[in-house]
Amino acid sequence: MFPGKRHYTTAMQAIVSALDDPHREMVDNIWGELKAVFGLQGVIGSTRPHLTYHVADAYDASAIVDALGAVARASQRFTLETHGLGVFRGDETVLYLHVSPSAALAAMHDRVWDAVTPIATAPKPVYAAATWVPHITLAIGDLTEEVLPLALQLLNRRTYEWTIPITNVCLIENTESASAEWRRFDLLLG
Image (tube, rainbow, N blue to C red; front, side, top):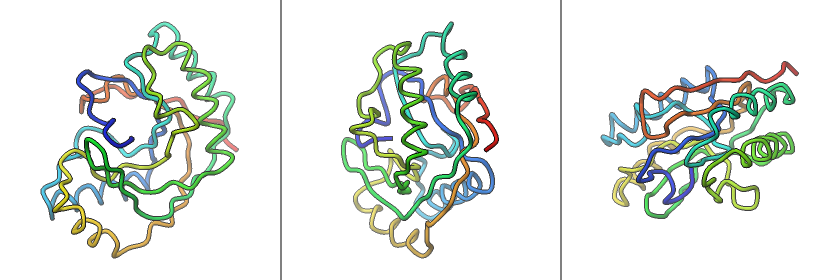
């Protein structure tokens, strides 16, 4: 997500790509380690590891399934590269995994943005191409300034040069609910 933009006063909907194993498990393990060592609850239990393309108050329920189905049918699977840790500072501090820009990632973002913005209520402008910072959230919400340097020290024991296959686009029905439905649309085999 983006600094200060993660926790809204009302539930949002989001368009994301869910990470598949083994990368889903790798991020889950990082979340578990941050919880065990520092008591961080930020993303644990409220979501699955993912990359976010678009967030809005809501999407037109009668059109979103068709829109995302069309995006999936027009998109081949691709890979993204990560390259280390980063921090957003805002209303909430966010610790994240950097995602390297690429033509394939930009094309997917554009395809999603073009398909869902016309059917979105109050799309969040921080996800527009000019301001979007692709990343995978590792901690948010309860990450304090005192814990941040310790968490960075702990996590910097390993490298984060990952190549992650992106195989899907998903609709998260409610970004604030651990039990929210995720509607998954698989991308074409490359």
